[in-house]
Length: 222
Image 1 (cartoon, one colour):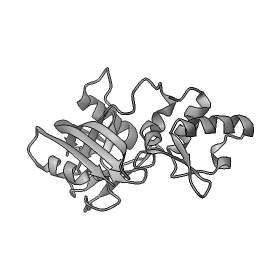
Image 2: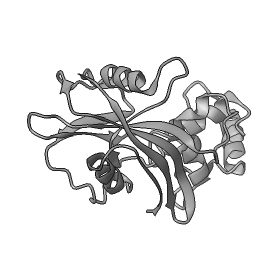
Image 3: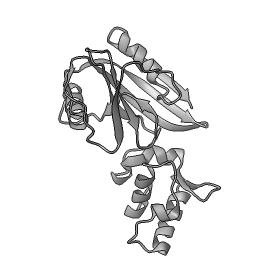
């Protein structure tokens, strides 16, 4: 596990990039020797790797920790991560609200908006609150289905989630960007099978069009 705040910061920083050089990764205020010591620790632990070009990148295990590295490490990385997936479609023109990921895992791929379940709110209210906070949009959500997704890259597990799919068609307001971790946009004619889409998007699209109450469990390789 990540035993020091510098080690946690290294993994967190790399969650926002494909790869980084030593000078880009090291905070200016840290001594090179001290930083290199902790960098070697996260490499030895299997969270970070150095490629042939001398660039540092997260391993599959490191990507699954990702931006959660600054949080307590009590959550086992091989346990399914619980997430809400928000399928939002605008009635006026049929446009879908999509998000391009700016963090690992699956950096750069596009899909539906995500929210984390909250202990003090039901999932419908959580979906509405997170949608408003991150996009400025308001709407009423309903639970539509649930299931599990596993995504492998090169034979190694990169993402394992237990998801609840919520749908919303009565969306209102002007789209705004209020987070650096994702890029939101409307798409009137998305290709859910495109290579820059998350591999589960075809499944989620079909679920959203089917009657409510469905359960799916799928594994993908990218």
